Image (cartoon, rainbow, N blue to C red):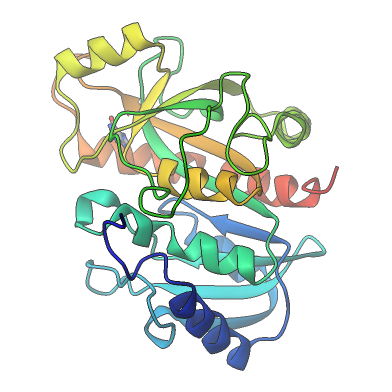
Length: 286
Ligand code: HPA
């Protein structure tokens, strides 16, 4: 039974595809869902066409005033890309299937690759603020999936067994990740690998939760990314995930978690991260 009969309705998706196609006729190769602060990267793209989310039937509207969603189609590093701006989160109250709707739309429009970035709290004690972390696996601690209600049947997951429709493993593409690591190395950036735990939010974790997540094997914790990645994987897309560690997770440093500190760290690594994302787009094709 579907939890919401509209969210997987192919007719809705057809209308969304038609609305975009009316405005832009290129097919993107790589879709980019970038965490806050990386919006400027779209300005580095050429021949851009902007499609406002409000023009796309079924597209999730941002609840944050002044942060209306839009898709920016263009070229970056010789690759046809699309930027998803105004990403939405489960804690904003959307059904998880709607959070993943832009991924279904962009896949239908031709995108075979998805690059996702986010900011996260560091759980691994060797990950200082400012560390960049390639995501090699995740813990779904929000226990929500965009596949619910899609007619999908249980499939084994990312632990070496068969997965989703395609049987491809794991969620985060090892080959693209290795190429991206080389880009980081060439740029002189210290990037690590780790496991990302997705929590519902909007509040930061309790100290007890962070202790528990550490025991479960998480290196970082955040409130995004997993819905879009789960959807992309189910569609057979090639995925790369990258976290910026902006703070020690709750309880791992003296004092309360300071949002200003989080913003300061994001600001400090922004230039490096933008160069890295551009380089990753350049090596998106193996
Ligand atoms: N927890 C959850 N999400 C986050 C954090 C955190 O510590 N830092 C940045 N995003």
